[in-house]
Image (cartoon, rainbow, N blue to C red; front, side):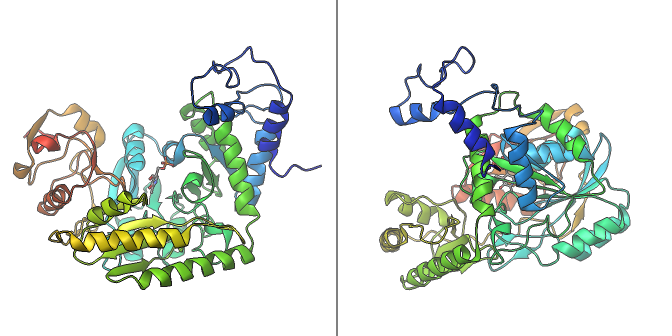
Length: 474
Ligand SMILES: Cc1ncc(COP(=O)(O)O)c(C=O)c1O
């Protein structure tokens, strides 16, 4: 009989035999652990590649079966489970399609993992600046005409690397035309769809880049499907990319001791999305709309809908998203992120009849807004457009050149016109503001100042506490 969740079932069967462990991991099925009881219980399933549990890097049994079901669900040529997030998927897709010295077109508002991959592989990026959306106050997609122009200048690029949807759930209707255009040049399109693993669940969601013809698509199952953190998917559907090459790099980049909890969770998430029916979507959309309407009745609260119905933006006029987030957290309500304008919330992919504490969350939001309104408004700096008006930008130096050149720390106020030597990444969303090799413009510096002023957090190699950044020595 065909198994519905092959990996979950194999794991259950194995653990059900009450096996003794003379193997790794050292917690011996959870029996040697000081973790709290509830956590210890999960360790019973934290297995390794034992007889009956298949081999992640050479799958022939339960993992192969589960990945085949994943492939069928997403209608790909080949699909892979990832145990190190979309991060490893982004690395592998770039390793599999590019070689040192190749040129690629890259959407500039991509996640840091894309830029890390470019640096590791040693490719020469040409950055494409996104459009600015006044509705969400976020950078969004690359305009079709920009891709057209870039391809005329660089017809021999090895890949076009896009991000869709954005962290904020925005997509473009031009995506299919962009993919088709790249394919006329026989250039593969690689899409970081980290935030869109649920798109295939229903027509209520935007279309997945995979269905629109993209060659490789990476999805963080853990972001919008009920999967454990890090659990992700990679799909290949292409006559331009060899899936075996992707496999080769995934074998190199992923652990040789994959977590079976993550793998089981991926199998379960795939089953969840493949059994999602229109009645579920109808229920979700109705619950969502009722909640939105109830929120809109709260004075001074603005609810912004975006392309992805699982995402919403909440704003309180006169206050930054950071101020709002702080009040929400005082009421034990945790949102995905805050920015200068708003907070971003992510709704669950509910199935018919699922309960979710919408009413209670509304009460907490209402209380948070009421308290927020008694606090001092922070002057709302209108975030300057993050990206240059020049839509196609070659960095001043390649990653390799940056590595070799002399560098220095200088006050960022004196950095206009200099070239960045390290990445500075407002986090979340994880889109770098400065990338090694890129010229530092007035617009970029004022954005850094604005972000610092409103208390944004930064990752990367920086000394922002001393107001210093790392640049190429002149
Ligand atoms: C657009 C985008 N791509 C990739 C990633 C990395 O995904 P993961 O955390 O699954 O490694 C993120 C994480 O936030 C993201 O927002």
